[in-house]
Image (cartoon, rainbow, N blue to C red; front, side, top):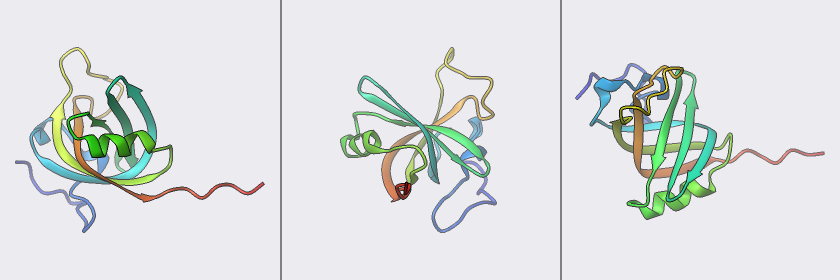
Length: 120
């Protein structure tokens, strides 16, 4: 288990940009904005961002309720997610991302706020 985050609040245990390989295996709760969402077969990926950076969040079919929720997420929605930090498999590391080897698998998710529609 890694050291507690200095950015810990009542809503989250870590900031998105804080996750590193030493957090692998830790249970974390993150809050942030959905930057991107991608569906690949039975797996949905979101890039979750906050003031500290971003992290890739994986929603797999093994947790059907959160996977269904993830498919409804859209850009700029504010969400809170909880799950285990896992390392990216070798060969799937993106060196252009700061936490290049870290990503989180979600067990629980909650949409905190959807953006308001723009008025014309």
